Length: 133
Image (cartoon, rainbow, N blue to C red; front, side, top):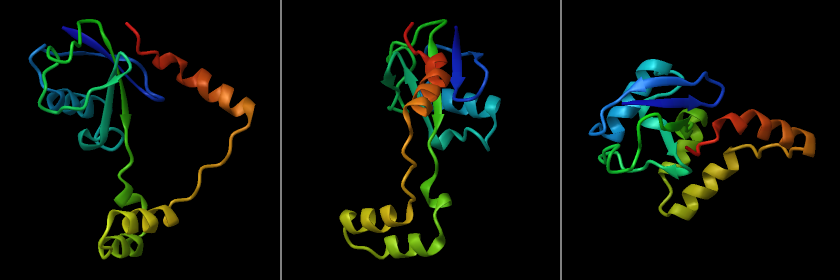
């Protein structure tokens, strides 16, 4: 069966899959098509019909992914690669999740506030990722 794959800022493509393919297999196929630099399998988040396809070992059939279905793909950033080494050294030396979160959040810049026009523009650009079948 074929499924349509759409990543943010990428053209929609069709990939041939088997209903018994696992999510991990699909992620590898997506990585092969879009490239390991933009969509590495390890960082992909897949969405089908407004549900995250989380379980790597589940098959497409088990998750009710149907032929001609649409799957959105997002490459989550690898935070370790985005932060300076001293931040990770400090976080690694922390003893509790709260301390780690504090160290990391202090290093991550706050996103800019968007005005109404920017929000509308962002919504319009992502409208194409409507994941309803």
